[in-house]
Image (cartoon, rainbow, N blue to C red; front, top):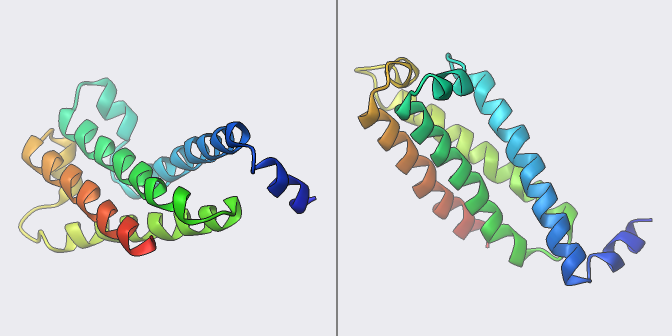
Length: 139
């Protein structure tokens, strides 16, 4: 069965659709996990116009997709790509906790929920920047 799927993935149209689908699915899963670890409700904050939270979420989205950007050309197997995507995501999640730890003068979640755009911008750039490091180390 897996061999047949691998044969199908040799077709560039099917392969593109498969990677796109897996990326979108994992993006939703990873964002849901981020939602669980933050002290506020991400999408409720965005709905009420919280730009800081939107920037932080945007950075996470870019970071996750950027990791896939490095993974897709590296691995011929979709399964290997998924495993490395999880690993890259875990590293991105660890970066979130490191950011919180390295800012003892304020709580990142509290500042984001107050729409502190400086913290939102910094959070966005941390996610984006570290996604390049994670992606480069994977490839």
